[in-house]
Amino acid sequence: MNKQLFRIMHLLGSLHLLTIAAAAAASETVANDTQDVLITDMINWLRANGSFINDKLQIRRIDPDDPTSPRGIFALESLEEGETVCNIPWELMITPSENLDSYLELPESERLDCGTINAVIKEISKSESDMTPYGKYLLSQPRAYTVGFWSEEGQKLFWEMTADEKLPPIWIEDLLEEWEEYCDGDGENDNHVHAVMLVKTRADYQYLVPFYDMMNHNNGKTNVAHKYDPYKGDPIDKTGYEMVTSKPILAGEELFNSYNHCSICQHYYDWFGTPEMFLHFGFVEGYPQRWLFDFARVKFDLDWKDGDEGTCKASLYCFELYLYTTTNLADFDAMISMFRRSCCKLSCTSIEEGHGLAKEGA
Image 1 (cartoon, helix red, strand yellow):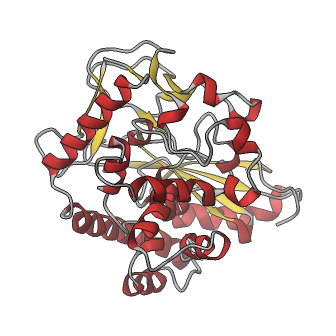
Image 2 (cartoon, helix red, strand yellow; image 1 turned 30 degrees about the vertical axis):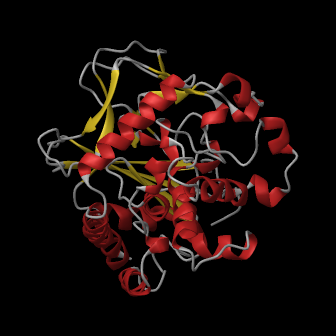
């Protein structure tokens, strides 16, 4: 079992290298100055057509001195808690229907990814004069940078690294195969495949929302929240897609969303961890991380403490282990001891029972 955990941690480092290599290769296809123009045009188009985007924000490189650094959304001035970040009207989003009522009347397949993917295909297939600035921005994005869209050789290497899917993430080919099977997709059309990846990596539920989808992920620094609640049936086609700050944000700080622990992400909480983030979004998230092994009814959170955030070098790690069982936790003393031995820099361990997943025995 020690060897298994070592392989998991080794996999993290290897995935970092693969992600960097894939991103570097993809970035060569798009000139930086072209991206800046496309983003500026999109923001101007959004504001000219009824969107609210807070004037205290800017989109810039995370490292302004590095032209290859990823972009993020930053505060130019301090923002108070509850301040509106953006509100994007329904008609500027890419959705599978003209309004929420007609969306609810769609066949189930169209209410899932199929309808949204078809809407993206329609948008990025338009002529340049008819395509919206958001469509042009999406069309310009790097291609095939998530593992489900890698080449056959790249996926074989990934399977080798994960012991033929014995380690997560698994079923990496499902993202594309499900679209081909259930949506009657054309896997030979590059633009259609690109549309599938755009929806898998950028959509929030069935919606692609311009500007909002440029917020980066960090579960340790999340400072924005959704204003609307789909679980309450909020009429987003009438109110718009609104985000607000969830805490005060200082000038110069980046705005961070959570892709799996957000205020409307309840359905992700107990099955969408760090490996699934890599599968769907193409990056290995920083700490805190969550690893889930459903076959063993175990998950654990991994965080680091007392380190240099700039270099991500930690002197202490914090490890939280969750065991999903209704039996006496004393039965798992041996497993807990193993985890303690395996994490040589472990600083704290806590255990919870039945945290959100099924209650049957392990």
